[in-house]
Length: 170
Image (cartoon, rainbow, N blue to C red):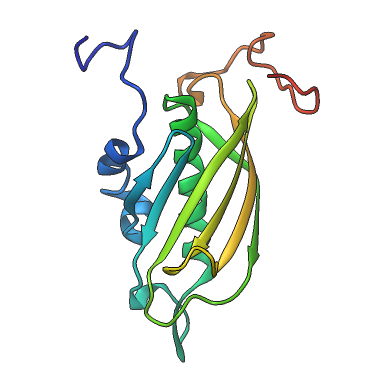
């Protein structure tokens, strides 16, 4: 199989995708880095830097960049689980902060995708600053999976891509 085979693309790899995702844009500016991956999870790293401080008198990462870290790790965990890249949209991302990150510390975000349906994906994860047993935050979220690229025009509503929230489809 060639690398340009559009009918049988290679399985999604968060490690490989991060080489492109983190070069520019918001994730590039944040400085997100790939850390690790499994069949249904991804771990990313957000390094501490002064521009990302939340308070001028405390050298800790602000909550906004940590939320962005966890949102990106969530999307990548979904693609890792589904083995393919397809558009997703964040419907709900709950962040329960346990404590501030330690001063001048990086934060890692580890997210697993624990359930997918045709129309939704469910994630949970932990943000930590070096000790996963002492989390900075826990997250839980639901993402809408999109059947086609919305930039290519209207997506026709068919049985295969209609919303299926609440019916427990597999």
